Amino acid sequence: DGGITQSPKYLFRKEGQNVTLSCEQNLNHDAMYWYRQDPGQGLRLIYYSQIVNDFQKGDIAEGYSVSREKKESFPLTVTSAQKNPTAFYLCASSFGGLADTYEQYFGPGTRLTVT
Amino acid sequence: GESVGLHLPTLSVQEGDNSIINCAYSNSASDYFIWYKQESGKGPQFIIDIRSNMDKRQGQRVTVLLNKTVKHLSLQIAATQPGDSAVYFCAENIKDWSNDYKLSFGAGTTVTVRA
Image: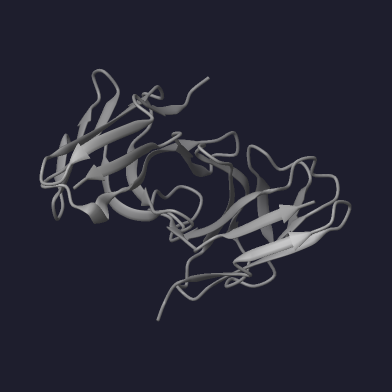
């Protein structure tokens, strides 16, 4: 089956630790995205990547880092510099490059709790 | 700033009735809009999209209407069912400073279907 997978579904970490969230897609999409969702709020863009080995900061990139070494994979690291890391993290992907408009397909999400 | 927003955060609907979910946007240059459905603890799921050269688009039990004059988007769900209970987001495709297209999401409307 084609789709986007995120792992793990639930993640618990102690404050001060870095943590990496996995996102893999087998849809052959060029673009991938990371969003953060807080209770009762919409999605806010953290980072996005239109092609391999290139990525751009979104609206709330501080305290996060990403890499895009393979087309299928776009891991997100939540660093200890992120002041309020507890949230629901969503990965998405879409066709298209820099000037295209296509729907984004979302993964099931990872709920990160930092104590 | 430019953003996508929803008129009402919650909507309670009797099973079998039609639902109308509204969304206002402020970026007159936006040319692509999407409605997503998000069930509790899951990633958003694509419902329907519409481009700015259209006023109306229909899917299975859903219709999206776009009024560019007043920058208003709506999602109509016919014969609402219990499985339609979810949070509904509208998203607007915008071009950022680097000429990349990104989706900007509203805060969402929580739809509850009464039996």
